[in-house]
Image 1 (cartoon, one colour):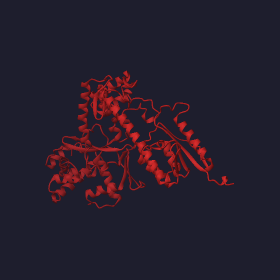
Image 2 (image 1 turned 60 degrees about the vertical axis):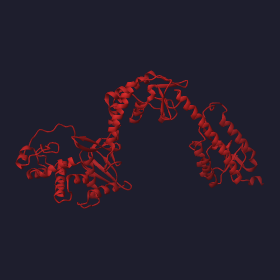
Image 3 (image 1 turned 180 degrees about the horizontal axis):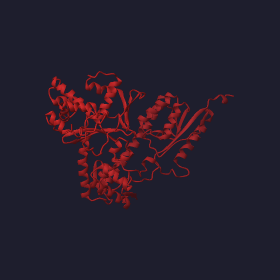
Image 4 (image 1 turned 120 degrees about the vertical axis):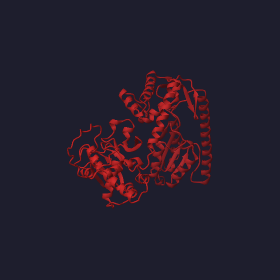
Length: 512
């Protein structure tokens, strides 16, 4: 009767092996560990111990960390209250780290779970048992660190002698008998990548060229899908290939390169030319990415959910800001949205106007306050061909839709005529209104100089000076712009940078 009143003790057996060696055997190390643990549990059957059917096996996983699938499942089951005792063959099967063991013991204590190593008798519930465990773990960790040092020293010595000691095999080579052997087909691919980069001088053009040729990353035989390769090149893998000195017949260790046993694929001259071009392009790229004041950075996307990053270009000494789709930056033009590039001033003004109206802000609200309201209120902006959607903070539940039409580029300009445009040109109208506002600010001494005004509106002084000329247009021309019935010769792109001062001369020059 007493035996029937014994509470069952649920025992989970955990096994681990550090390497794959011997796992293919019919009876391997994991089987031996489990058999020993099952025998121990059976010896405690009178105490109600019984083995849970769930296996917790980690083949080919290091004991130096807790990043192991079976161990994670074990800890999850402990948290769920499904396990009373953890049984292992030796303590180092569970962990070889004192810090990790302290975390595990804390978890065991919190869930009232015991821990047993069948070849090392102790009890974790007593202070003496904890001391024994810490001593054993100290030696286990020391053994692990000593082994790591031996391996590192051996690898360093081998690399200094030019030997291949393992790792990711680069494109162009195969690993055979612990040596790198040239793969002729892949070596030709490496030659093509270096040659085309020198010819095209651009990562974006190179990506497109490799796509047309059907050239992909190195294919690898691995169980993890994301490491199998055979996918189109992007900037990161391309940069790694173009900088890799392995192709010169060298191996790397500790920040230094050493002459290697394997044969080179490239000659020194070609490699040096590519490095010089990479350095030149890297300086340009870093300059273009040092953008300040990009209002919609991190918030703007195209209609294919590609993030649009701030960038700029300089023409005739004037900097023009814009946002460009990441897909376009990575050379994936076909993956970009309908609007892959958009003027920063245009989209920012649209969003600012929408937020001003949504929050009922005063027309005289300072520009810096408006920008702060946009940063605080806007969660995401998506650019479509015929609309712009603005999702508001905090949970994107409110969306503002703004109808618009994307500017048409690369179309030939219409011949000069006096035909009416019927509707005002929004960009030209905005430029005229802004020019008059800027002129008022200068006349009222709100800003002492054009440079001070330009700093406040975050534009280059040359841009401000160019746009100020719209404030001096003849009244006839200004009224026509406001009504939208100006000739086709009057647009932002067709108004000359230097206009006559006389209004009659302006009218003749612009076809009035």
